[in-house]
Amino acid sequence: MNTAAYSHIEFMNPKLEIKYLSLEKSRNQLLDELDGFDDELLNTAPAEGKWSINQIICHLIEVEKLTIGYINHKLQKQEDLGASCFSNTFKAILLKLALRSGKKYKAPAVVATVPDTANLSKLRHQWDDTRFKLEDLLNDITPGHMDKCLFKHPVVGPLSINQTLGFLNDHFTHHERQIQQLKRSLVS
Image 1: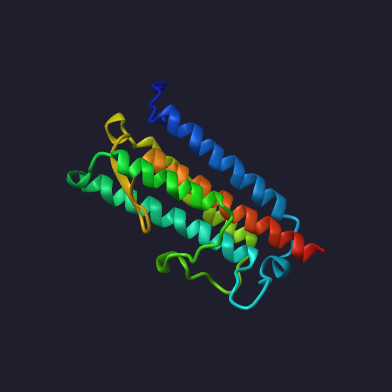
Image 2: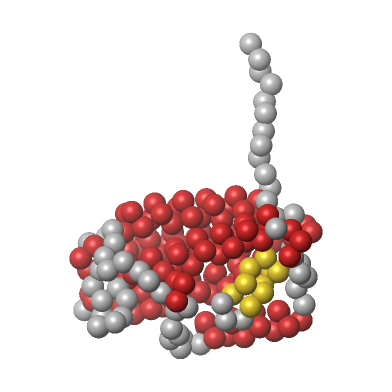
């Protein structure tokens, strides 16, 4: 009997792991909180042309999917990886401030299309799958990738992986506030 253990355990950079776990904690708390609501309520838009809670979640998932796809593409094309500089850091800070301001922004066209209705349970499975892919991606980030611009935000441009995770967190928080406001208005 062969008792040799083969392990393909990969370890994430500790800085990335902290940001990833924070994203996961926030996502799971939100989905657990919404789990008690029926899909009819979660698919109720507050007004014509405004997104429902489930549509906001669809948008969050799509942003993460496209971010992961972009980074994977950049990692495969290694020659295009430029180093992050002061300008990238400054723009990342401006993006953070904009998302934390509470001001509403029009979603870029590439992530602005969401279905009319969705099922929260199915969305949770889609988001789980997306987060597994994000975790795999972060496990593949080498120390040499840490200061490289791996993602290009549609408004502020190139971001490092740390800045990208910061954006995903701030983007989530921005929309979580909207979800909480919408939930309060629908329940009352």
